[in-house]
Length: 474
Ligand code: HEM
Image (cartoon, rainbow, N blue to C red; front, side, top):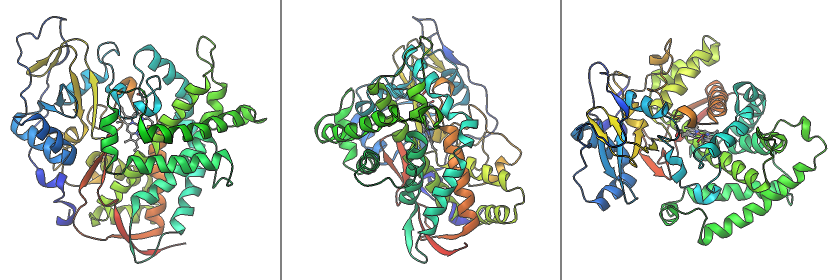
């Protein structure tokens, strides 16, 4: 480990637990009782100050709260109620394995709700969620994803060929170009660059614009204005109307395609899918699900890759070990996997996920009443000293011969709300990381680690993962 791989905002805040992970009882309590247990301590700051600090410096904020208040505490975000934050794997297990009636997901309150509506697989809760999830699962199974590998590979090689030599550039937008290609091909069946004037071309352009708009600083204001709404307002509404026209045109065209039953893209599969009751999805339902997949799937994967390289170019040992393994073919798969898992541990793109309990819930020494939003800090779980010795060091070796634990390594969440695109995201990261390590010699443009920036529900490298490409192999 070299000094340059430490000292980021995550690394420098430090603090945390030591020793063995002690068991911590958690789960539903009798409907009327908190069993005499106290509610978790509150962060002693005015609401607005908490909200601002959480938005601006979430990392320092949650690490400090854990250091000062322990592993369960209450904080105020942008909404009226306080939310409880926990980082104990037993608490995580209790929420991931709870019935959807007792602990529905907080994604129902997601900032994507005004865009994708309340009935999509991401935003629906209860039976509606299960119905949509069952319909969407088949195209995201490991085997179905295998079929995409070649396409991911081609999109990656095309992109790598165009990167400038010797000049610093940000990786995140380049990664986004790859993941957008992959999502457009995998979800809509649109491969390569579509012809101008076609609905496919219009759709691609509008999706790029929508994603670009959602990562600008003003997006946080838009997000605040949309809290609790089922429909977009203002400029967002106008933008979505344009996008919808193209989405519906693409759906209509595909419905009439002669080769529909031979196609493997998600849209074609969904057009033919039927629920247990034999119902097909309406165009509006299709539109909602397709947008969820594009919005949830492409920026997350791109930034996860950008973080992986932000770490690698500052951890020469890990970087060299990866390049050696890939270039010599010696235990390359194992090394690639360990590198991705470690990058997602140390920089989870979604740092916080939650459930709103409908009955009182025990969290170790504390209890919370029915109706409380409990969030699991992925970032804090991933930096527990008892689970990950020297948690602030980037050490892929810790994963050699060790499998990530279901309640300890949770970048994709868990239970019946676990990320639907996890297999696709992992496949993309494997292919891109391998190609980059094989062909490119990259360096950091600045030895100082990049800060984390918070956009919507994601945590992204503040400078987009800036690197300098020293040489490229063909
Ligand atoms: C590295 C990339 C990704 C990360 C870190 C990530 C992370 C997550 C997380 C944390 C959740 C919430 C889980 C929970 O509450 O327990 C989630 C849900 C979801 N993700 Fe991903 N995701 C990624 C890529 C993708 C991709 C590629 C797709 C699709 C193409 C996708 C589609 C979804 C969907 C549909 C849900 C909602 C699932 C449900 O509620 O049943 N994600 N993701």
